[in-house]
Length: 450
Ligand code: GAP
Image (cartoon, helix red, strand yellow):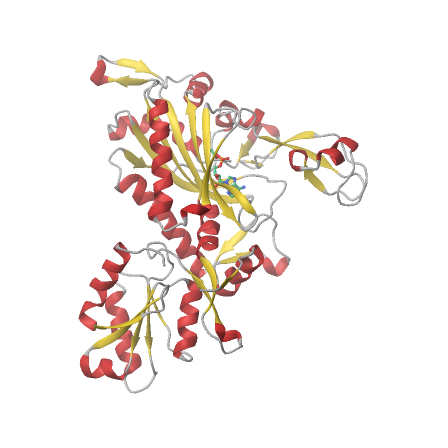
């Protein structure tokens, strides 16, 4: 089928039009680096989070969940190395005040200290810490500085002994957490790709030193399989191994899963071998013993190594929308109806799974359709729409990424059958009302994108 290229402008426009993502504080001109999730967006985000949590905890017998606080003791960020190392190189233009990341600038212009926007003189490069600082308590002096966490990982490390003791976890085991993180990003562009406030889905897997390479490879495979399972086009993904100059201060080895966004291949998730760096540092800074005692092996003591899988939840929302988006030519009338915009979400993550549509509002069809929706909503995320021509309603559901539509017509009143329409193929079949739920369950289980 003929289709048109996707661009970030089209994605941003669809997200606003259909209520996936809105600009934060739009009526005041917007807040840089912050976005709000609308009715469809929050469902999509929650479904991705739920799919990740299910994969990590429900389907894995040695991973448990945690929800640590955003505000943590400031010493945490000294121990983690973020106070010292979590910086970007920054330059300002003395004339137009524009601000740039030195590592992303044209090298020649940087060497000449020339502003790429107005040609003015640039300042020297200085280190800029990405952590947001604020104060806790009624006075705002340096004695009560507190940071908004720049990663969720540290909340897991400082709780690792609590989890071992309370849940009797034995190495190898993992702790998974989804939550907000904050970074004072100098350049926030490409919509929700890089923002100051975002969400992460992180899992820290605690292993015996010496087994870390093996577990690192295991988690690379698992995370790759997650995207395949949830319908991402695999030719849009690739691995990128961090070179020596790219490795974070804590990492022995790191691979990113990159996705081909409209602006090119960019990081979606990282898998990191963080060694015993974090737990050793927390031992030094807190004075608490962070060793694991292996009771099955003569009480052997060691600081575990940590394999981390760290995915952006909000970045995943953008990825799933970009991956699902398609403009397809479906007619030859020479007008706008020749094209449809469709989001091919996997049914497990689609904001709405099934929409119920009465062919007409009158003659009892609306009542019957609502009755069917009431039956289905126990098991599925449903929508009901009775306004406008049926073709237009199908288009609206296509744009929202709803994989299944049930249409109730006059025959439904006679023989208790309905039309089931598939979003991707636009194929329609007739099935008995009593079989709708089971049929949709089986379609979800066997779904592959067409
Ligand atoms: N705990 C390790 C860590 O935070 P990271 O590579 O800095 O590693 C992990 O971040 C993931 O978090 C990235 O792959 C990306 O998906 C997401 N992420 C990082 N910074 C982000 C930002 N400013 N906006 C949106 N997502 C971001």
